[in-house]
Length: 466
Ligand SMILES: *Cc1c(COP(=O)(O)O)cnc(C)c1O
Image (cartoon, rainbow, N blue to C red; front, side, top):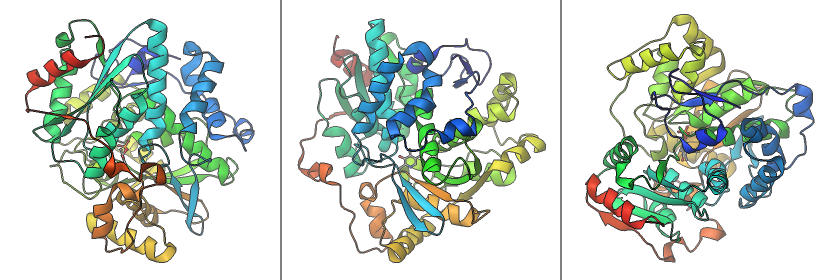
């Protein structure tokens, strides 16, 4: 399988190189040159498979001969055995023909574990083969950091440095990062905000000379293709559990960077009958404004009760724009260069084409809280604020009640106790047993000034072979 850039100028790469690369050299994102396509008959034959067997069938064409089939199967078995539910991604019914798929049964209680548990293992496998080492450098305002640390804690060939804004992430989120110990895990609290952290990471990727040529940086944010790939699987899983592929499904996806929902779009293109995808955003609604009015325009960042969806631009949306423009990299490049300067639109027929599959809704904090309370009252089921946005949008945008509507449950409610309290629900969400002692565990992190030279010096001093 070859991968090409959405901006058309960077060289095509194979799976291994795409895994180790962040942005393409032309500033674009990598996508498969062509997608595998499965017949209904083939998808039907996957009924009753375990999650990891299904994951193999869906992902193997992307990995191709980079990893021998037996090794890849073993890796997937290990990856999905760390989840705390036998079904890995269980479905919970909310109402007639309406469901939540719980994607928060992994070690850090958010859906990002699906991809990052696999990514850590993929990286280590490929690096072992190549006798190489990488430094993962990432900035986090919450869920990505902890999922990446959990995913890489056992990697021999990876050191991971995660920057978070000092005293500006929730205590649960901080502890999920800082209580994981391992000599390749380094948490840095920066005396600054999330944007400062992100800027330092970006600049370091742009100029890696501080590493002295002895190692290289790798990315774990959702621009990494492997993360998208791993998220395609659970769309198949949900469909097969509810009568697919012989009936089509609708999904509602709480989204910020358009990563998770882009995986659903790919599942459809690979042959899974999906008749509707609902883009569910919070007040940071650039995607909703585009889908409802064909205008892509950056607004100020708003801080909401669903912080993992607080974004100004939506990085993976570029991958959809590439398809909407007939895979013309030059057109995407021009469009996005213009988008950095001001509002942009796409040709009406392209936008209408997107609207055939996608609907969208923006849900504010009040409606988020109302939904948490409503579902708790109706079903005694507690939603986290991100999932609540998905459920609200699903109900607002539903086209056909005979089509099963599945909202992706992206986080466990115990990760966001403040939002639950604000919604007026009196029950307190409990951390699952394997994390019940989170607040007693010892934390390890280093506080550094908001200064890139200091952060880079810390990295060069502390990576394993330094
Ligand atoms: C990361 C995250 C999202 C948004 O995912 P995208 O890939 O940006 O669409 C939604 N909910 C939770 C809980 C998350 O951690």
